[in-house]
Length: 78
Image 1 (tube, helix red, strand yellow):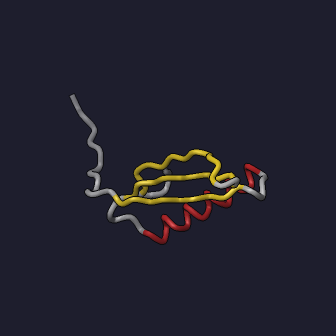
Image 2 (cartoon, rainbow, N blue to C red; image 1 turned 30 degrees about the horizontal axis):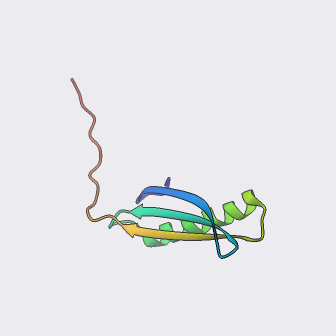
Image 3 (tube, rainbow, N blue to C red; image 1 turned 60 degrees about the vertical axis):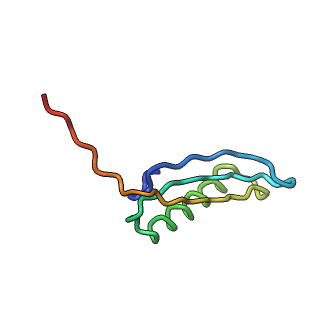
């Protein structure tokens, strides 16, 4: 979620047909650099493998594209 262009990301661990799956879902801005997004997803899956220390864990990354580009937040001045 810290990569520019990624609005949000969350994950959960589940079992599917006897395998341990780390399912990560993310939402990206329409203008996101897909190369950066793919690099970030690869880095997260590599980190998960190292942190979990299990050869039987698999990562599944699903990305969806937001419908509209999010405008930058504005600071309110009183």
